[in-house]
Every structure is written in C-alpha cells, then in structure tokens.
Image 1 (cartoon, rainbow, N blue to C red):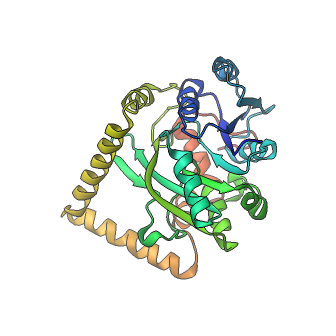
Image 2: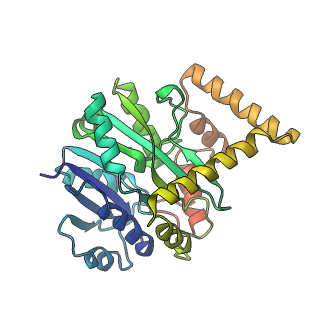
Image 3: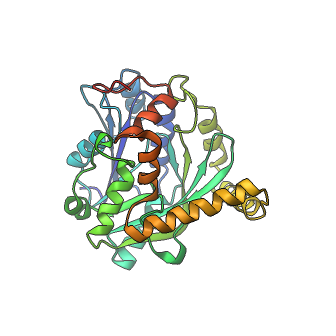
Length: 305
C-alpha cells in the first residue's frame, strides 16, 4: 500500500500529460501510485503513459467522454489504495518537494487537508499567486486548485465524491473544497510554492492545437528548481506591485467593485465565483461549457451548447 495515491484526469493532451507525469516521478517522496484516468481518450495517451515503464503508474480509459474531471477523478479515487490522496491536473507541474512539504504539514499539524502555493501563468505570460491564505485560514472565496491539495483518505470518504459540473454554478473542485470546510475539516495552507499551472482555460484552442511549447519551456526552467522558484516569485511580486501602483480610474473602480462583491457574498455565504458564473452564463454548468469552447473542444455528450 503506497503512502500517496495521485489521481490525474486526462483527455487528449498526451503531449502535455507526459510533463505532469514526469513531475510526479521527480518527487522526493517515492512511495506513491499514479492513477491516470482517461475521459474517453482517443489519442495516444495509453502509449505515452506506458512509455514511462513505471509500475507505480496505472492508466484506465473510461468508455466515453464525459466532458469534465468529476467522473474520472471519482473513478480514480475508487481505485486508490494510499493513505493520502492527491490530485494533479494533466497540464500542471509539481516541484519535487510538493508531496514532502504537504505530508509534513498534515503530519505536523494534524490537519485533514494541506495545500501549497501555485504560480499560475496566464495567456499573456503574467504570473499570479494562487493558494495564498492571509492569516493562514482558508476562506470560501479563495481559489485553491486541486493540484495544490493533499488530504487524508478518510476526508474524501466523509465529504463524498466530486459533483458533476453540469449541476453546479462553480467549478467542481472548489465546490468540493467548500463542502470539506463545511464538515469542520482542518484545511492547512503551506507557505511554499510547490506547483506551476499553465492553464488551458485561458488559452484559445489549446486542446485543438495541442499547444505544448510553454510547458516544455517551463520544464526546462524547472531543472534548476531554486532558480525557477525565485524567478516565478519575482514575477509574482512584480505583477502585484504593478497592480498596487495602478492609478487608472477603471482599474481602481474594478478592484473596488470586486472587493464589494466579495464582501457581500461572504456575508451571506455565497461564493463570488458562483454568483459571477450565474450572471455570466445563465445556467448551471455554464462555466465548463465556456471552458470547452475556449479550449477548442466540441460540446460534451448530451449538451447542445
């Protein structure tokens, strides 16, 4: 039985997936299993996974595409045997101490779930900090992507499975995390940059074009982890400084409006992203449909939009 079971949901991005898998194999914690669950993949994902020749890695391909991560993630958890459970999106990358840092936080603090920090690179190349928790406390309006998490296995059993995006205003990962918090689970932030995200949702036709250049460049940079961490943190600080010193009226007005909406939502216990998605897309599941269109994917089965 491994210490950690890692679940990676994937669909037809084998060229990017190989980088995510490689980042798992670089972990200083080596007692893990990686369950790669294809959401009806039709590319060479099976060949790419097999090319690693690593008995700790298992690939299962679901018989049809469901159009989002919830069902593949739930299937992976059902197969998992580890004491701890982690998720890694197929286009995200871990620094080699990701698992070690989070296991230390769980064991040292007696927490149910720990999460690190992420450098999230947008389509313009700007780097943003995600997972930051002022005061060391998780708050429901705070986005903490699943690739940042490590949890005790029994927490997932208490909270229950990921819910389908078609039933939600918000993303399934954030809805699951809020449910975990509502159970009284201890969610422990770790003030260490452990993950890099080069997200597909903000990159038009990223799936259709099989874009990979940014990932390849980042992987090369991460060969020197100390230097790449420093560069990413410097870029995050520079971006934050630019935002702080912005004086354009529209920029300041937008920031004030976002702060007002966040405070109002927090007062009534409604996640701001769910409210924004309800207004923007008009029906549940609208956010994931928007992401599919942006990525260059056809509508999911049973979805006309």
